[in-house]
Length: 210
Figure 1 (cartoon, rainbow, N blue to C red):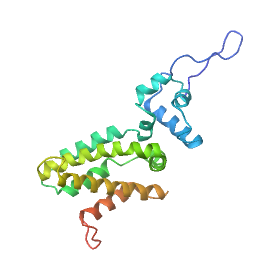
Figure 2 (cartoon, rainbow, N blue to C red):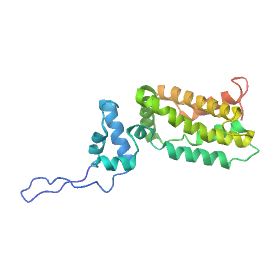
Figure 3 (spheres, one colour):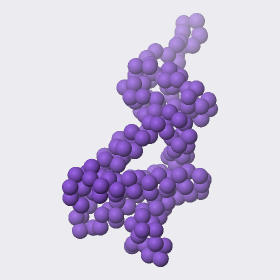
Figure 4 (cartoon, rainbow, N blue to C red):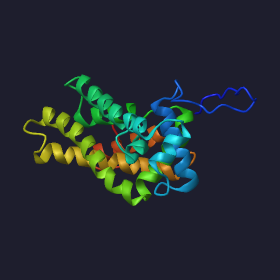
């Protein structure tokens, strides 16, 4: 997004000054993803992203802590929503049912967001720098789920039971995203639903929970 230029006294365009008032975190992310698509993630610099939206390098780092964080978008906010969903579920509802519903709820995106999300997933899964960075982000996701599981199972989030739940759930979610990303006509929420139902039933296709 760029500011509209005026004209100088000689009729020539005046240079734009400062950051456009309407620039947002989303504007920065979209400009970055466009550059990544056209010239590759590794060949795109932070300075180029900042220039594309008319901001300084320093301002870029007010929006995102690093270039990898641009690709992860609103992941931190999604973790907050996931934790809230898990915490507000009735204690009488089965653990795996709560997980299934909560992960589905935090992965509902508008039609206009899906192409961008698919691009993010391809980058995360294929760019070595991002593959390494993803380990940190996935650990944060597991921490949320393990905390919930510990509340249901007892003990510490670091105990075997909660960790098994968290990492099995992560595997199911990653499988759902991977299958969806390969199918342009796929339904992300349906894939997440199916993956978690398989996990909840021990991969017994003869029975799925309601």
